[in-house]
Length: 197
View (cartoon, helix red, strand yellow):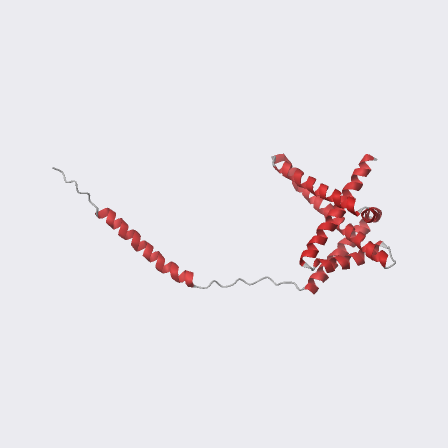
């Protein structure tokens, strides 16, 4: 009669090999885990003065470029921002939401991706110019209080004021958002008015 005994030697050998492997891994892992990980060198943090100088130089350079390339358009847009700041802000919010929805809708299709990339670049350039012109309008308000309304003086006053505000953590982000939204709204509202005419 055949024996009903099961040969358990392979099973026992497998369990012993497994436990030996776990013990071996644990002996190597534990000392490695106990070691301290060296700290990565931190990126240098710009001081407030250097951040102010960099922001001021960039604002002056780009602002002067926009004023120099399109002086009449810049004056008209600055005047619109100063006369209709709330309306420009609302138009800006609607424009940002519309651009976001259009980008999401176009990226669904393969053909739309080809259109989205140059479109986003154009919107970014227009947004930068609009932000700079809103900065000039902000400077014009401050300069008007000092008795001057020259666009170049407004550029300097606005660049200094925005650069000072930009080094304050929350205030700087909020200032850039408001100026960018107002500027974009002024561009959009002027564009639609010209199309209607």
